[in-house]
Length: 221
Image (cartoon, rainbow, N blue to C red):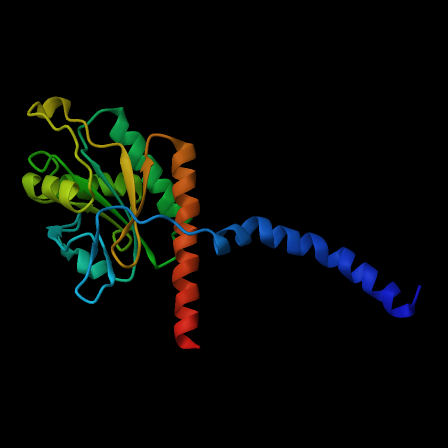
């Protein structure tokens, strides 16, 4: 055995577990792409036009006027809730809180929770609820607005059609969490009641982050 080969073998032995770990933890995100949900149209120039979340103007828990355009270039997780609703809302908001903590150091990820009960979920009530959830108002907005406007947004932009009845005392918000990429395209729906599904959402946020940062590097180079 040559001297060069004797040196190379222990180096390969040391490097193999490191490379294997990198493939397991990050390599899958380098080769996976997420589907784009919603209707697709062909533009005048023959380009593909994907469904996009429309802009809106509502108010967050701090009483600030907010627009979706404020989040352009961000990766967004959205959901619907009511402070007064049953255990399902509590579980969904706890999962949102978990995601917020997981991505608290990443300024590209934001969270939106739309109240479906503005008559009782006043702005002070939303602020108090946000405080109980330890929601960072710079990253996670609890949103107040006209109920019909929010339901229209739910149906037309997020493509969710909840069965909302007039019994406000027994209001049930949709269980889904929606993942929107930095171009306002819907990239996934997840059951906010299931930890395993939210874990999938966590992993797919990482995929979008990888895609966005890789694209940014390519544009710079």
